[in-house]
Image (cartoon, rainbow, N blue to C red; front, side, top):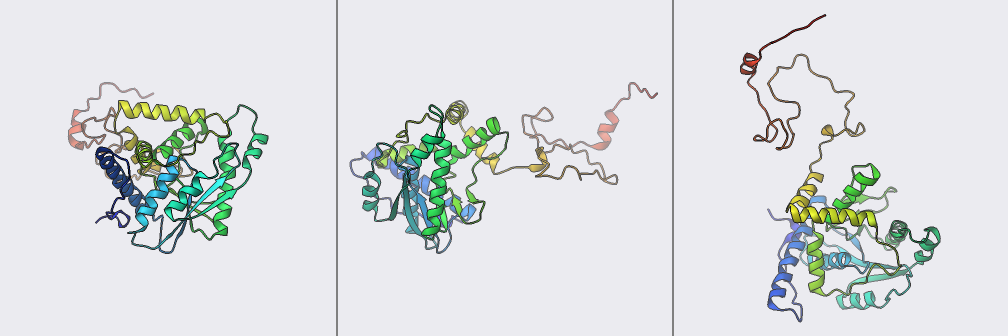
Length: 325
């Protein structure tokens, strides 16, 4: 049964594209639409009557998010509203006319907010240090508050699959935590629901799509901040893996959807203390780590599963020495 949010739609024509580019654009749009629709369905991101506030930064990700959601809105099985919101943080040189002009052509409801978080960041962060973290927190807090004012029931962010995986490794390498970005998140105060409809989308597809659509991209370097070097290193590592081992990124993301707390070491997620063996259980010969991966030393051919015939195995055991003080 097809996902409710992935019914085929007519792809609008884009001027000044070659036939090859137009074909590629259509293919990318169908793929992104299918992936966004699947994520919305899988995590129940959008429901009847929702007012979805799409946070628009002016980057490729948020432009693509708004574009795909507008595309899906026309054939979705539920009625929902889209409201585009941009926060002008008063960075020097920010082109204030680009987003309003673009949004007017779409006919979508939009709000442009102004808040001088740039000055706060410059005051709090020493010169030369990365400002992205504080800037992001201030921006997020402002947008969360505005969502309440306009009655938004969902806040849509443009994070994609690569962002989620990068965050996983950043938390492991530098934070000592096994966590990433959830596709759907309830804020700590319970007042806002954050959704990431592009959780299944690859960044390289989004970048190509944004280029073919010729979105008026606003660069995220107006504040003069250094790029987050840790995230950059993780991104490069993942890109190298993707080139050397095609499919590895998809496998990592699949792993995030198939966690096994009993196979980790977090006592808060699994009750190891209360585990007890059953002295009356009948031995079947199965190993305890039945879910070990295929490359494990136990059994490469059978994906880590070893089923032993009890009588045969006992017959093969030779007691060569016994010492008992």
